[in-house]
Image (cartoon, rainbow, N blue to C red; front, side, top):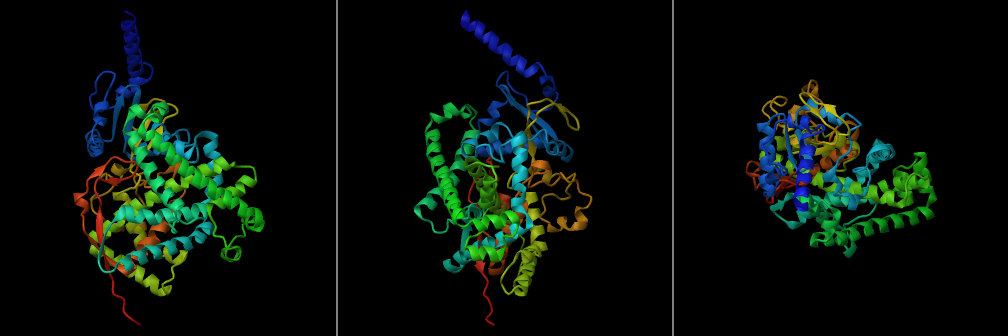
Length: 505
C-alpha cells in the first residue's frame, strides 16, 4: 500500500511538473509526440550519428522552433535569427546550464561557465587580453608554428594524405599553450605528452557523459570506470597548469620590470626580446592577481578555459576550410594568388598586417564557418519568462540555439549549400540579419578570441596554400556527422597535400 501511495505521489508530481505552473506554455510549442513521464527520452537512446540526424530532421520538420522533453527537463530548439537575437542579446539569459556544467570538474567556474556578477567581472578583466597590441605580439607564435607545421609535411616527402583534424589539432594546441601559458608542447617530453593526451581524452569523456543522462549525477558518475579515469586525467590537467603558473610566478618575482611594463602598457617586441620571455595570457592574469583581483585557483580556471576554447575549435574550422578549398580548385587558386603576392611583398616573412591583408582568404574562412561552424549549437537557460517571435518561453527552460541551421536557412542565404566566399564582400553583408551568422556566438557572451582565431587560421592556411596544392581524398558530400561538443565527422576526413615546386631565383 505504501509503495502504491509513493507511486501516486510521484505520478502527480510528474504531472504537475509537466503540465502545472508554467508548463502549459511549453505544451503549446510543437514537437515530436512523447510518452507519459519519460517524454522523448527514447530519441536519445540511439547512436551519436542517429541523434545528429534526428536533431536536424526535427529542426526542418517543425521550423523554426520545436521542443523535446524527458522527465522534468525540457529543451526548446530555435533557429530563427529574431529568436536567436532575443536570447543572445539579453544579459539575463547567460546561464549555459546542465550540459556545460559537466565541464566544471576541469574548468571550475571560469569565464565559460560563470554567471552573474562573477561572469561580468571576469569578462571585463579578460577582454583586454585580446587587444590589438597583444594580438600583434602573439603573431610571432602563430607564424612560427605555421612554419613548423608546413615543414613537417615537407619533411615527409612527396604527396602526403592527412587526416585533417588530429593533424591540425596538434599544432593548434601548441599555439594555445604558448599564447595562454607561455609554454611549448613541441618538445614532446613525457609531461607534455601526458598533457596533450589528457586534453583530448577529457573532451571525449565530456561527450560520453552528456549523452547518458543517468550519469549526470556527479556521485553516480564518480563510481563508474569512466569517472575514475576522469579523476586521473584531471590530476594531470590541473597539475600541469599549476606547475606552469608556479614557474611563471617565480620568473616574475625575479623579473619584476616585465609586469610593471605590462601594467603601464609599455611591453612591446623590444621589451620581450630584452626580457627573453614571450608574452602570454598567463602574464596578464598574474598581473591581475598581484592587484588582488584573482587567486591562483582563478588563474588556473581561466587558463584551462582558454586551452579548451582555443585548440579544437580552430582545428575543426581549418579542416573544413581546407577541405572546401581542395574541392573548389578555382577558389583555391584565387587564395594562392593572394597569398603568393603577400608572401612576395613581405619577402616570405608574414606579419600581423600582412595577415590582415589576406581579405579573400578571410572571406573563404568565414564562408566555411557558415557551412561548417565548429560550435554548431549553443545552449542557454532562461532566467525568467521570455517572449520569442511566436511563443512565450517559461523560466528555467533549456534553449538550444541551432547555429548550423540558421547558417543554411534559404530565407536568409540564397543557395545555402553552395560554397561562395563572395557572400562576405562588404556590399553583400550590408542588409543581412546580424544574427543569421553567428559562428562565434553573439551578444554580450560572444567569443572573446574570435579575432585571434581568424589570425591563427589565416597564418596556418596561408603557409599550407603557399607550399602545397590541396586535393580531396574524401569528399564533403559523403561526410557523416555525429553529435559531439564540436562539429565532428564519424570517420577520418582526409585531403592530399601536393608539394609545389618552387623556382630557383
